[in-house]
Image (cartoon, rainbow over all chains, first blue to last red; front, side, top):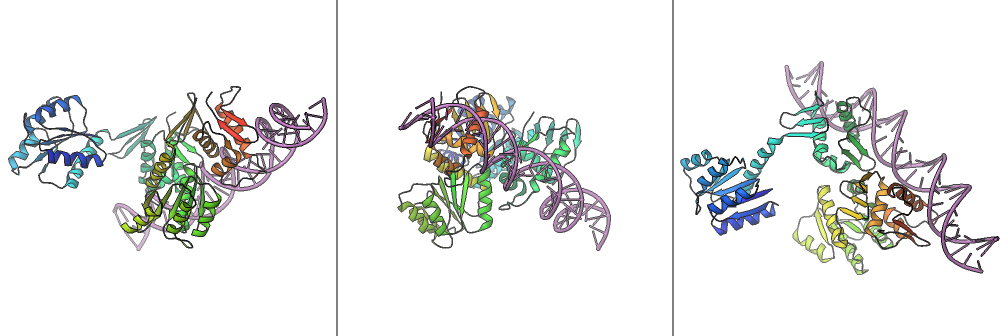
Length: 222
Length: 222
DNA sequence: AATAAAGCTAAGAAGAACCTTAAAATCTCC
DNA sequence: GGAGATTTTAAGGTTCTTCTTAGCTTTATT
């Protein structure tokens, strides 16, 4: 996840760069509007933090420019001002959210995550071979038919498909899908793998969910 | 890769043993400090997981004893306590890292891999000639084809490739790959070397696994 | 060349891991 | 509170891995 910060106050931009770096974002900093425009044109950021008051092109103008170029990158305004009209201007210019200075780092982080989540939500459809799952509507299709899955079946399938090609060990599955620890003596996983295979394998011989004996399972396209 | 777990709570040790087994480690469990000392003296472990609060010799004392005997085996502390001083004591006693209970299995795994990496420059992908193994996805490729290996085949191959160029004696192979002391009356190793050669040598005459008569085997590039 | 030692390989027994089904326990919604 | 759906446990059957055995081949030594 790559983030651009457009901010002229060194103190703040350093603080943000360090903090976001620790959260394992890749961070670039532009100290003025022109530099910001240049970087945002050249690179493909996942999110942009934009200060209201910057030298060169103003924040609001930069925001408009970015939107004009048909980019839907999430933009969060950082503003010292507290007037309703400024907020309105910002959002009208195409910003997704704003945060008032001074702010707590954690609050900013939370808002960033919200933006990235909704952005990810644009591709709420996971696919593997004939199987397609829509995370938003909670629907699953195999070939053309819709298949009804229960909650647990759904999250198991989601975990397998998100990790397609990789072997998911029983331990990891239990931790991610069942939220359990330390229960090595259960065969729920076997049962649910069986459910999924029955529902999704359209009576074919071999499943797209492969068993790796002594290790776990892996979802692979044929 | 052979790991010793010193932990008195059966639930946790079973959970760890299964989980690490799935990641193709050979795992021993000691339920108290004395047993832990005994096993760690007799066997050559690649890593030790040590609970803080155990019957018999305390975890911290066991750690000191191991270091006293000039062993540099990586030690990771498992601790329920959350005080700074305990951590300090643990690290002073010679531990390499610690993790607070309860922990996610994958976090522990990540730390284990870090310790093994710094020990021998490891990555998740091991290569030798045409053969490539991905420890994370548990896949093995020879030339372009994917080759299906069983658990034991996988860990034997891993051990050989980690020690590529070096001769692996039968005794060491048995100790690191099988969870056994050397039993001169077994020919499991021969059998498994044979399995690997069949699966990986693509019908060629000579194998990349060379036999060193009276000593063991060595994996070498052509 | 004979002999012994070590390794190779095929076949099969023992055991572990997995699959499948059914029934019990739990949750949900009227 | 009860009916239906979902989740979990349990158990028998099946398949695959692991390990042993035994006969055969290669290598080393005298």
